[in-house]
Image 1 (spheres, rainbow, N blue to C red):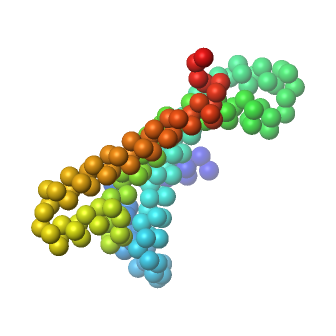
Image 2 (cartoon, helix red, strand yellow):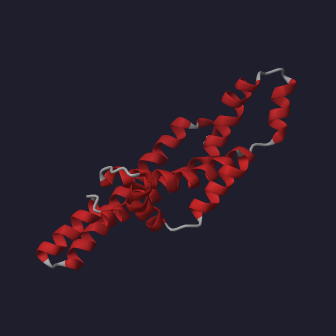
Length: 172
């Protein structure tokens, strides 16, 4: 199982998202003889791509827990499930949080690529407006401002909830 997940992570992280998107949208339907709407193909491609990155972040967070804490919990006679739920997971998730936030924002910004297979998103709307008005500069500057504002709002929201979720990580 370890070799499979490691191979999957390396394969996905070493191939471009656009290639994965085209394969899921156009290659898989030919191979498996099925047809989904393009938004479902885009969703599947994004899930397959970003799950590899999230898996690596989670692995790094779990490996980062000090062995002495686990040994101390074992010495106290705590059950494995309690050790995981009360000691390992809270610390690991708090340590992973900044990387996960960055990855979620990157996921949001990457969704613009799904317009390449015809899925309507913010970028697709901008391209549509540009094709009607021929005012590319204004349209794409506006899109850029929208993406920046939405990313900043997302980042601010996630930064505000960090102390609520992980009070033990915040300095008094």
